[in-house]
Length: 343
Image 1: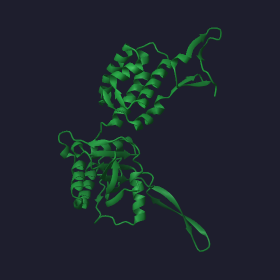
Image 2: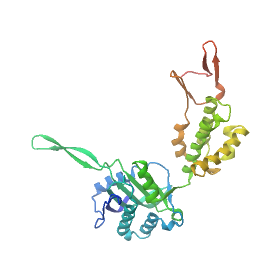
Image 3: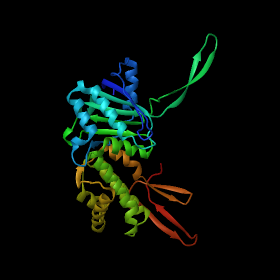
Image 4: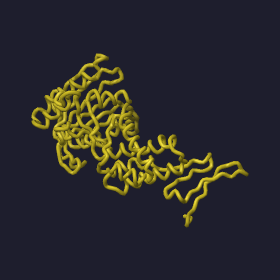
């Protein structure tokens, strides 16, 4: 982040049209000291920690997506930056119709020296701050101290933001977006203001394939096959291992290697079609595996058997070394574990 520089920055005040809030434009770009620029760079960029990425979209013609159109205009001619920032503020104001959307500062920022997937490029940032927090200020007097309070913006809590990278223009640019407020406002920011669709890259494919596999094993299979929790655990472990140890995903290879039974493999392929229709996504039969997505999903593939309130059994390895039984005398179930060493 240190190499990234702020080339241009404009600030406007944007309210809610339904609440008859106004929109106020600044007269010119902000002229900031270096220390304030560094604080703002932290405020704007630090929330973008995920690899989920998007493209701009439109139902009929991508050029009719206002934010895409204005971003392209700035990338082509940075001299249009300030006037275009006003157009972006007007568009945001027009979309701010839900009563929960608050009045706040709208920043338009042009960055340079951004690196995305090994490529250096410019990025246009759009950010909105709405939340205020109360801060205590310790004031030194002549021979004593006093405490005052003030309201301000927490630079560690960006409310809404997006970064538009000047890459893949033909597809709607590469975009990252965040919204740390409620779901209503997330819908407004992502869908109504920006009109984003997920970018179907390696991260998208891997993340969705792992989520689908987890649901298939834990929710779908138990109702269709005679399986106990240890069988589920083995499939989950094998699935996670496949994604860790392979560079690419292949549907046939995964089904045969992980599920290891024709009926299970065919059921998984059928379930994939149902899952895609239910969640309105598309998971390719062959794609490059994202290490970041695999690591992010790892916590969801931990196999834990909770036995009453007495024991939690973590299953990491071979299903053959654990047996389930029933003690009729005690009228209780039991698990028998085989191992070589106790650590």
